[in-house]
Image 1 (cartoon, rainbow, N blue to C red):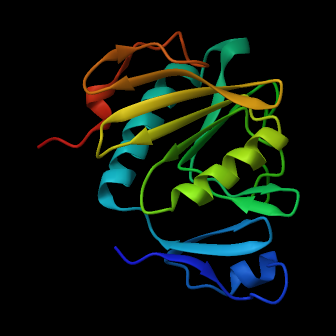
Image 2 (image 1 turned 90 degrees about the vertical axis):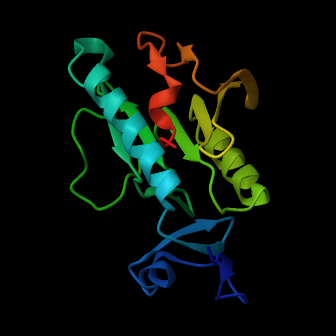
Image 3 (image 1 turned 135 degrees about the vertical axis):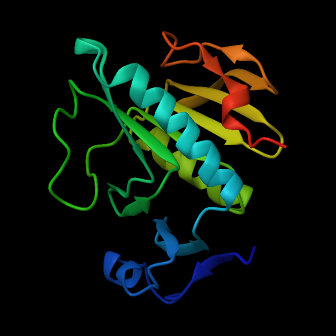
Length: 189
């Protein structure tokens, strides 16, 4: 898969107008003023995102005060940064209605980055932004290695809560009420 880690402009901070000029088949983000673009998610990434999103939506959409809005690939406008995680979630008490805009300005409480072709350095920079915006939990899923890393924000820093792998059944923050079968996230061989 061909990855374009950074695209022009190089002489100034990128804007949402620069992002809008890119072809529609790219997933683009602005991180620390730099415009980054990647092809649409690879099949392994898309498959894991759909499987996890479906499980979470079924488990948490209609739970009263515990219900969540879980969405795939939302465009998050967080200050000058524009990020697109694989999945994001907001408690309905914090985001009762979906916005009328094509993007979200309310930071999510949970994001899931599904590791693909994005460089590790870009993921690290995104984690800094998520911490700045007080996203309380981040999951990092690697569908090739078949791992789920759960992180919690504490005192402005990310703490690794757990790393799960293979076909385990797990209860992972902030969705401990769900018995998550990791085997369902990985493509069948």
